[in-house]
Length: 122
Image 1 (tube, helix red, strand yellow):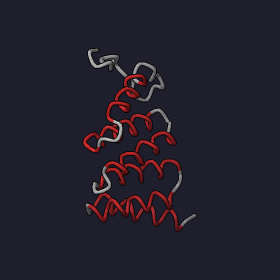
Image 2 (tube, one colour):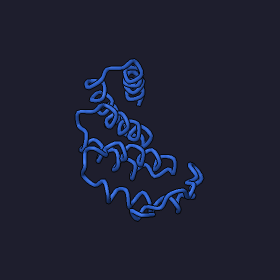
Image 3 (cartoon, helix red, strand yellow):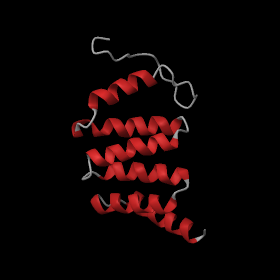
Image 4 (tube, one colour):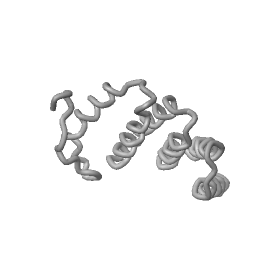
């Protein structure tokens, strides 16, 4: 623990028992802060939060990732996924469209079409 970050505590995904992980993640967030080199940390952290059903917090981490790497498709894709989980379909569609504009893929195109159908049926 030379840098003040605890390791090896075996975070258990999806169990709601995230106590051993949370202090370490907060330390990493403090350490990485606004450094664009570490934008992907916020993606991993966001998905961890999704496994804990902490969708609002995950959205904040994905927004942070977008702010650090606005030229990358993945942050928009991840934010779109979190918005979709929360039921914010219009916001989700916007983020997926942005991801597609940066890096077109068949998977994202399919999601955009699914979202358009979902929005049209509401």
